[in-house]
Length: 378
Image (cartoon, rainbow, N blue to C red; front, top):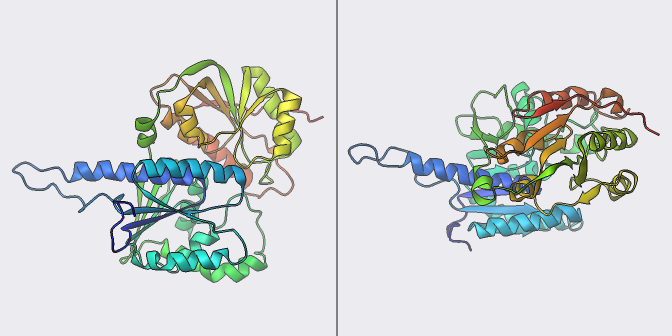
């Protein structure tokens, strides 16, 4: 067992299901360790200045609830190696490896859940995480960024609504939703601060309305900047892919033509694929537009910080328009975001999609705004 995990069980247990979530747990642990060291520095006269008995990152065990997608698994394994390099214990769970896997995973984690004093989670919308929350007795809960979904989570928590991902179409809940409703309701109650339980949100997202009692901590990617770079910057532009087509929000032909127009206007030749993008769509981008498809083996914040990276990074509304300017602060890289034209949305897109995507773009700081390009799919 890692020296950061005590013999009586972990002080902190973190659950992640994506590479970005794991990155942000590392950022959270790093930020709190630095803050704790500063808070516990001796005050004038030699008395302690206050702070905790030890940094919240101490005793941290990272639990990877592994998905089945090969690209996500590959990035998670690389991120797990980085976490081990930092001295943390990583527990890899094949949480979706068959019918019996969830029962085996939950049963194996139950003792750790009951002993942990703090639970850190990357996706409060995850049914897996919501189920695990029903077992824990932890009085300190932390939500780290899972991208733009964090903005919606905080807004729903403030309004007392059920936890539903923004891109899911509105309407009546399905049979699985109804079966899982008691667990989801329990998770929402546990994620609501009370006298017995504290809730922290660690985020780089622009969160305007914070629910009463929720402690908001800013993620400035200080671990990433300390660990990697500065990057070598090339003269050209790079495009960042999104999974808006795969989630049913944007029409694939409109997306393809928008990428074509952006690449031509800005001289972009490389396309950094999102881990959820389909092979078929990426093949079309390569053959029909001539882009070099790059499948990153780490989250883009780390890839960009390591370099080489284009002097301009082009993106549609996504998490990276908020995180890349932070990770690349002090460099000459410019991040530009292109609006999503409402005409690109599919008939099955959630009614909230247009407003949510507009909000992602409108609240981005230190980026260049590009108007939605006009496209005519062939």
